[in-house]
Image 1 (cartoon, protein in one colour):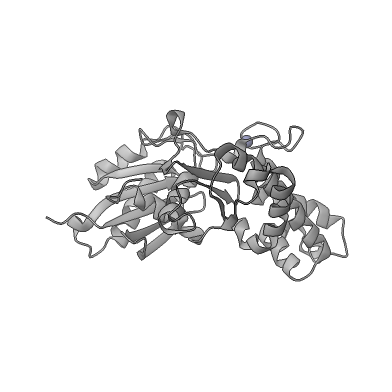
Image 2 (cartoon, protein in one colour):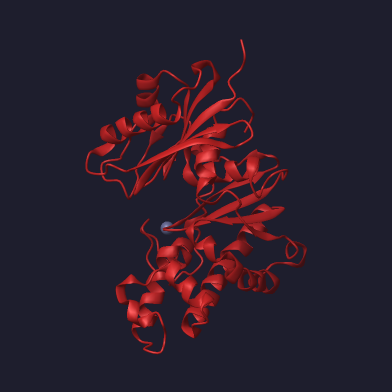
Length: 316
Ligand SMILES: [Zn+2]
């Protein structure tokens, strides 16, 4: 009997549920997505996942399929397979999603925090390939990530390690969704970046962002900065500074061989990189200053690929 060489990754998000069939080389052989049925609650989303699993696995020999890996926003307990609470999905409190899916599909199922899953994806098939130590940071609606240390995934107590976005970087800063003040996420996420840009654009009639009003978001600031808009350029420089401050702490904490940046805001990585590097040079202790900060390579698929890796018969 041949061992399975394929797995399905699911990325459960507040907007979309995405699925992909992945092979042992990390290639996406089939993919499907649907809008998350938020109003329907966990049971409805479970049925959506079952449907997506069937769709991407159509025509595949069941003996070749290792199972299903689910990437979801935390906090969650990846050991017991229980979602503890997803702020963007009402009703998702203490949901035993692994048990439910296993009962429905009768295949091995794993659950992983989306930041950690994305780190695993980048580790096996992206910017972290071949490294024993790196930190993956996703900067989008929030800030999350995962840490690979000494050649393994850093898990911590209750497997809750690497909630990177909730380290305090500004004690008097913005209030975070977690309730704390001044979390890195509250200062430097794509959401915070967009909020700051909207406030300043409203006061700057000379900026191309001014006319966009409430539509100003991180992506539009990046686009305007590329077009040479002065305010957008300043906003990008400030965002890079805020990201750099957090990254310097990650260098000191984990001594990685690289810091890998993914998530929506990494669309502006080339613009942000000089400002991030300036913070590293200014704030990191000398032995840490040579560590490269690089862009993720799998784009929006890091989490999907990483989730599938968790059930593929190779060690993570
Ligand atoms: Zn927080």
